[in-house]
Length: 489
View 1 (cartoon, rainbow, N blue to C red):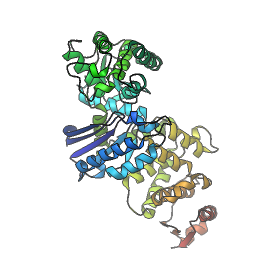
View 2 (cartoon, rainbow, N blue to C red):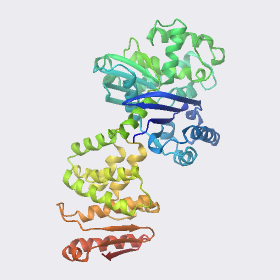
View 3 (cartoon, rainbow, N blue to C red):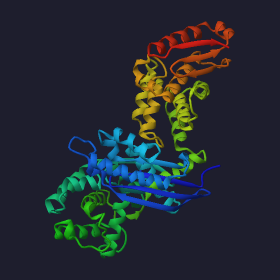
C-alpha cells in the first residue's frame, strides 16, 4: 500500500530543511516543516573543502532530523543535496558520514535536476495553466532559471551564483558599499547575460521567483511600501538605496527583515536586481518551498509508478535508437540473475540495474566499437531528469563494465551488492550475444568470495560459443580474487 506520509530533506547551501506532507489522492498537504540556517556555502575553505566545524554542525542538525523521520519507510523519504555538495572537494567524505547520521541515502542532484524539481514544485503551487511561465530560484550557492508549461519544464539553466556565495565574496564583513554592490551586480550580469536571450520576455507570460531569498525580498518590498505587490524593479532599487544608506547589515532597519536572512540579503538583492533587469521583468511574484514540494511530488509519482526516471529512460531509448528487443532480453535476464545473487533484496538497486540493462547499448549511436565506453560517458554527463548524480554514476559504471576487461571497474567489485549487479549484467549480455530470442537455460547464480553458476550440461553442449565465453569470463573473475565454478544442474 502506498505511504500516506512523505518527507523530504533539503541540504541547501544556506539552510537545511525538513518537510513532511500528508498524501490525499494525488495531492500533498504540508504537515510539518523544520529549518536550520547553517550557511554551508560559507563553510568551504580556500582549497574548496568543507571545514570541520561546518561538517560537525551539519551532522548535529541531521541527527535532529533523524528523530523526526523515525518510523517512516525508506521509500517515503528522500534526502537531496544541492550546490555546496556538488562543488566541495571533500563532499563524498562528508556525505558518507551524513548518510549514517540521518539513516537515509543522500542524492546530490545536478543543477538542471534542481531546476526541474523546483519548477515541478512551483507548478503544483499555482493554478493549472498551459501558458509559458518563467521561474527564478536564487539559492545559497546557485541560481536556477526555468521556463515551463503546465507541470513540464521545457528550458532549464543553472548558474553558479547564489546569495551565500555572493555575500561572502562582496559583503563578507557586513559592510555594504556602492563599489561592492556594483561589483556583485557585474558578476551576476555576466552569468545572466549569457542566457538572457533564451529566458527573455518573448518566451513566457508570467514570472515567479521561489526560495527563501524571493520570499524575503517580496515581504520586505511590500511591508516597507517599496512595492505595491510582488518584486518590481522600482522596489528593488529603493531597497538597494536603503541598504547603501545603512552601510552595514547591523544598521539595517527594515520591516519584515528577519535576523537569519539579513546576512545574505545583499547577495540575493544583487542577483535578483540583475535578473529582473536583464530578463526585462516588470513584476515577479514569490512562491515558497518549491524545491522541497517538487521533490515530494516527484516521490509521490515514484510511489504510483509515474517515475520521472522511467520517462527519461524511455526518451533516451528513442533518442539514441536503442534496440528495444535486445535491451528487453538483457534486462529481464539481468534482473533475474541479480535476485539470485544479491544478499538482500534492494528494490532501488534492482531498478537501476534494469535501467542500465535497457540503456547498455546507448553508445552504439556513437560507434559500435567500444560502445560501452561511449554509453558510460553519455550517462555520466547528460542531463537525465529524475536521476541524482549518484544514480547517474552507478548507471554509467554498470554500462562501462557490462563487457570487456574487469580492471576498469575493479573498485566496484569490493561491494557485494555492486558486484552482484555487475556480474548479473555481464552474464545477461554474454548469454544474449546472438541478439535473438533463445531458450535461456535455468540459471542459478550464487556470489560471495566464490562465484557459482549452475546450469544444464545439455544446454552448454549445444551452445559451444557461450561455453567458451563463460570460461573466459570465469578466468577474469578469478584473476580478481573471485574464483568461479560452473556447476551442472
